[in-house]
Length: 231
Picture (tube, rainbow, N blue to C red):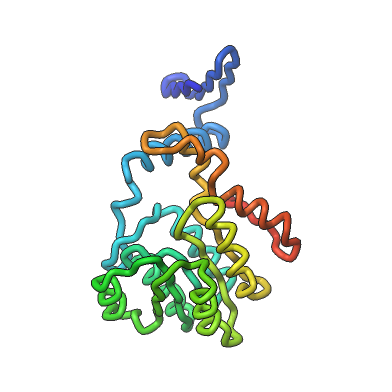
């Protein structure tokens, strides 16, 4: 696929072998195609490593954070379960949103949580709203520990952002879906993987081994969940 941006003619052209299509540069179609390539290039350059939230590193694109904020504000959970802690920035992000909406708790799970991350989260101004659990997020003992903390009658939202293989995400979806309260969400992140197959650092198997495939199959098995796509 070759993309041609002509700022003089104000056109955007996609060339795929013998097929060629030109649209206006300032159209939704052009914007979506250019945005896709921007995300792909940014991923290869680790652009998402450049950000922090209230002082702690966060592996997210700013637009993704805005989208997550919209979902949280709409659903109004009092408990957010997040698999994948990294260095604590996303847990703090969720906790600050909950605090601004009147209160709530974040439960973060990761396979390994360094001591310095635990300490940074604990001493943060919203640290009292965050509990972290170390272990495999899909291990029965860890799931039961999370359930014990989350099952207090409050609305629960789940965000899956740890391992991104189809098998791992599928296990997490089955493990944590029962925690999600009516009207809330379970979010499987990093569906972009299927678009990164040919990007430097990408892997060919990501075309089928990705969170989106797990989410699609989960939704087909669980009619009690409605599958929502980003706008």
